[in-house]
Image (cartoon, rainbow, N blue to C red):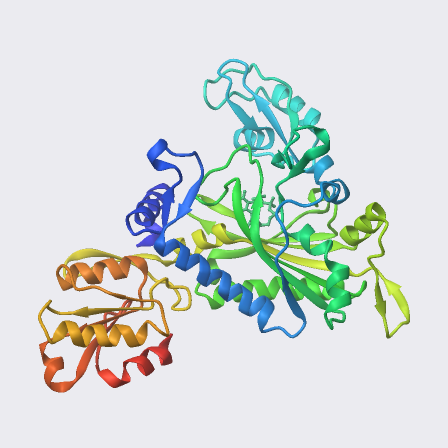
Length: 460
Ligand code: ATP
């Protein structure tokens, strides 16, 4: 059913479900809303936490050679000079003189004539827009300003004086916090190459064209691993992390047919990169980047060594040499990933002649693992149900719900992706058993109350 649905209609249904069921709310809604800014509601925050926990477990904690880090968002401004962000973290934007709309020059060209202009200068893009007589998508005019570069970093001031000496930036990626701590980790942890440092945290980019719900926002969260390797072993590790990230996605329920690799051609590579592959996902609005995997070479460590004057080398016992390691970076946005998991999970089927909507989320990601319902608000049903709930909530995020018809209670749990619903009915008083219903198949099992926890543990 999903594949027949037009992309826009599917997105509308997903945005509406996200609001209705407490996943994602419009930010500052009571003040008219802040465009392209979203808040995660009670279900969204659980889903997000489960995604981050799954990543942390599989990319950091369960790996002997990866450690974690949590660095500051506002860092020494020289870091952004050294990393190249001050000089080249730019998008070219262009204004329509007639209606004053502002666009990304590359998007205008791509949408109008399908030309990929990544790597072209602002002047080259201006020329293409003029030569091809591209029209403003809003008003149809061909009266454009020249395209000019716009730095995507958010600037602010630290301390009480607002002058150029107090300018600081909100980090546009978490990676630099890892690079500047490379020496600290090498000196204080017992790590040896190859080893990684992982970090989850907020990043900020003053995007010219945010949109597509939580796909592209100005404030977002990243999960980044910097995996340091000996030069010469980088190609092998690049291939390793590409596959590992892909397998991780399919392992959590994203179907392989909705995922693909997209290799960046050499002329499109970022200034620090020797090779970059994106894992792209088939969103309802098209195939888009989900996860970037880059071979950043030794660019970052070398540039910080040069700008800070501090040694960023690693002593290799085998060769007896001081080397600057290469780094492979798998970098994924939590919000974008959350959207992909919801898109993938959104399912409609028919139950008793009417349409049912459920989120087919992997149990590890589902915000609520089980819901406990007493069939009626009468004793001893309520008491029995509460006892089950109290026992389960120590192990999982579970909900207790006694209001409304059973059908409505099921529907709500289906829409938030709860894999199991447990109903205490009048027979439970006699046989000390409950009915456990599985979300996707609607299959019901009669399970002894004492076995409920084990039943769930075996399946979640
Ligand atoms: P795009 O081409 O979509 O702007 P990018 O190539 O600039 O992305 P990277 O710098 O590689 O992105 O960032 C790594 C990851 O961070 C991306 O794969 C994406 O998941 C996430 N990400 C980047 N920018 C945003 C954003 N504005 N909103 C949400 N997630 C983002």
